[in-house]
Length: 212
Image (tube, rainbow, N blue to C red; front, side):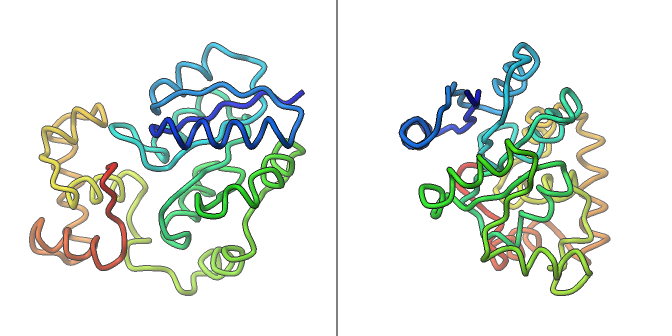
């Protein structure tokens, strides 16, 4: 039997995914509602077979949760679920150690196949994303913000969402000075003048979410 954990801050989404998995696989599913809860669960459960992780959660988002989970248990398979445009986030998730990336809009159609593939040791990418990820890995068709580190990318999104440096430092457990340094690097690398430029860019490229 597969042991799975779903980490998503939306109860309806968690329940829907859980029921669908139980109806189609020999599986036990637990649920948590935040990245921090997912990390605590991973630390205390050695028999987990797969983590199904929402990329957009309040506070600690999926990319940061993925980074910490992989430090704790590098071999734990992780499937990222996202409402974001695939080409914006999939490559970062895969580079961060994710074993698959699936859009929430197609989750019910492909979720079972993705879980089976990943638990068996494979990597799952939907057909709609495979070509784009391959192109980005070759350096083609990469968006301008691809030059940012994962932490810079995360800070940029939070600034664009209207978070103050103090709020960001608290959410990411970083000093305000460190967050300010990340902001300076973002402005320099992206040739932005101020936070307004960051916000406008994020809106144009679909990087914002109400859940950030």
